[in-house]
Image 1 (spheres, rainbow, N blue to C red):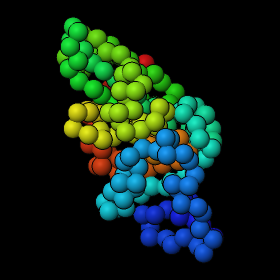
Image 2 (spheres, helix red, strand yellow):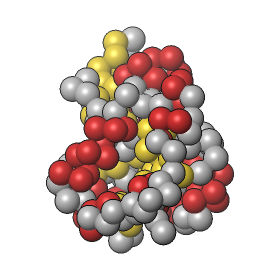
Image 3 (cartoon, rainbow, N blue to C red):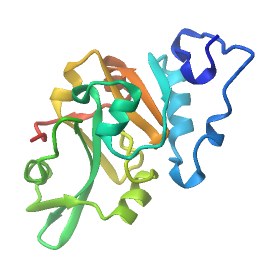
Image 4 (spheres, rainbow, N blue to C red):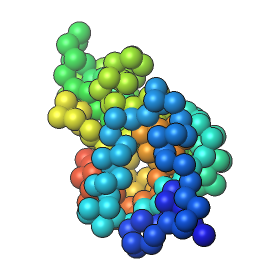
Length: 190
């Protein structure tokens, strides 16, 4: 019988009597996003079609994809990118590309009118995203962040990403993701 973690929650299925431990018990608090519970609640309230996939903690998209048995081209590689004009930071961006590609920092800088872009320092990325390294959500989880997604990721019927935690992933219908995230789409993948 399915548990809450392996139930397709959008269809209103009820977990069985032998429910899995609460998600809070499966990973240390330091590996949690402050937003993942709200994210799943939002998915439920908005009728998104998604699945939660528990797995061993992992911060690399290639290994997380292997653990959840998802194609790399459908797995979201999410990076916090800092765009600068000269020495001044002009924008912090959540840049999302397929897992088998890398972020083109020059393209991100140009897209936002900057002269340079670099990966945001880890401590600052964690503060801005509210997630541990390797678990950045493919959403702009704050007014200071802008979301940009490579169109190649959204060519699939379903995409996968870590759920703001290193031990949980989400598979969501791409159409539902686009409605919920409202991403800016641009060719930012190498």
